[in-house]
Image 1 (tube, rainbow, N blue to C red):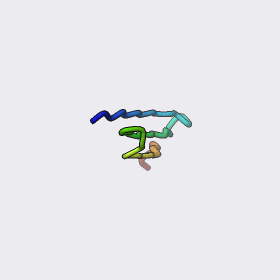
Image 2 (image 1 turned 120 degrees about the horizontal axis):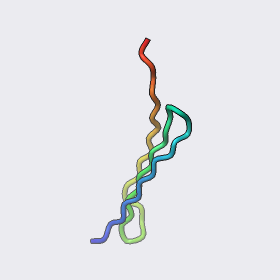
Image 3 (image 1 turned 120 degrees about the vertical axis):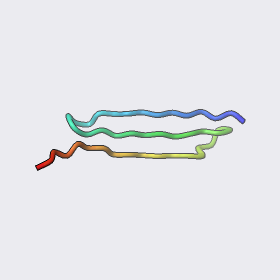
Length: 43
């Protein structure tokens, strides 16, 4: 069984980034994840 995994991390600001992951199997996406990350300062 052949799986292709693609992951990207894109900076959208000095403390923010977007993460994307998808897994393809036989030409169809079988798993998909989008994640937004930000750094929050402690007060």
